[in-house]
Image (cartoon, rainbow, N blue to C red; front, side):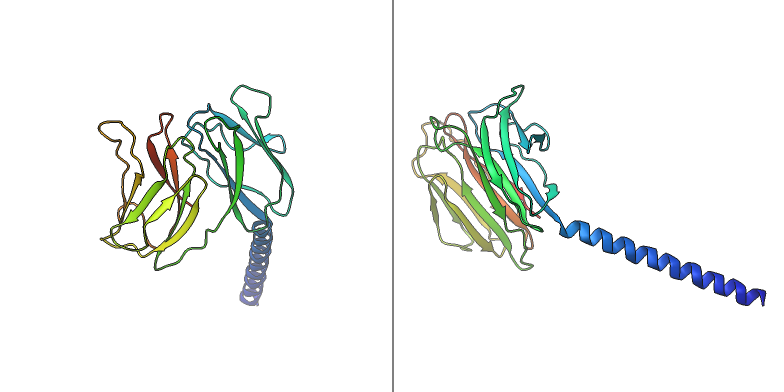
Length: 233
């Protein structure tokens, strides 16, 4: 009889534990389904450190030129005002008045300019982070407002045809990465700097199949070509 009572108690405890576990999982799933994610990039080589704000609350840490935050979880299907300020300033420098991130989506905010004389601005863009297991998804985006000529992007492995990109161009390519993959970046009209700054290649040591990347094509203060590779998944 004692053995039966012990087994009954043990079974009751096990069922109770399973119920708690299932309940916990359901709550966690509901929480995740209600989220969106936002990250911020500082892509203005002529500008100082920026603080970013979401409805007046700071979004991540202060960002210097050439840096970006990780994705930050926010409530989806809500409306937000995104602003940036020069570090140590209380005044908004740029504003996105009303963005509405959808549940389950990822977004990036880029602090940049259209030219060296244009006012700074924020660009809000949805990120497609769905991977392809047999290829790398690479988004090339020319935000180099200090560059004096278009940028030519080529792959010696012939995964895609030559790209000629002016400021603002955003092109996505699916690339089956292998040992022959070697993606290079050059200005149509190189600067007079001698020797030319080295812009590293993208190859099988830097990008992998099954991953999603953003390649930010950028320019230094003096108009030299630069690029940044950022993983999105």
